[in-house]
Length: 164
Image (tube, rainbow, N blue to C red):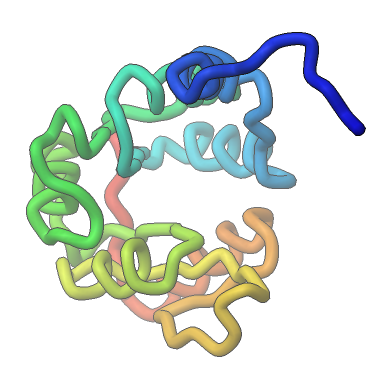
């Protein structure tokens, strides 16, 4: 038999998750390099994430990426969530850019990519084998491919918003 020396209540387990999850967050490969490149090219960067406000901000801070973004929108604090178009529209307003000059990168085919496309943005799907075949404006395996997409978009006459 296996006997635990003490019992963990559901409340204790939830509290542990809320306070400790940030210590288990892992960056996608090449995320920092990509963010640095975009900022070096004066791109306006925003983040939209679903979840509880402080919990999500703790995770972003633990990853050390909050200073790369000009706007961070968290569904709890915004009163709407992906895939609702309102949260994408709020992000565009905060960044003072139009949907037509914006690219949205996400790993969820519906909540990220299709929702962004429905809001008038170009959608980039960060491929995840879990989803199988996904349709998107662009599909990438690695974040390091984003500069290639930016170059291609520019060659196709798509203006991407930059800080002036």
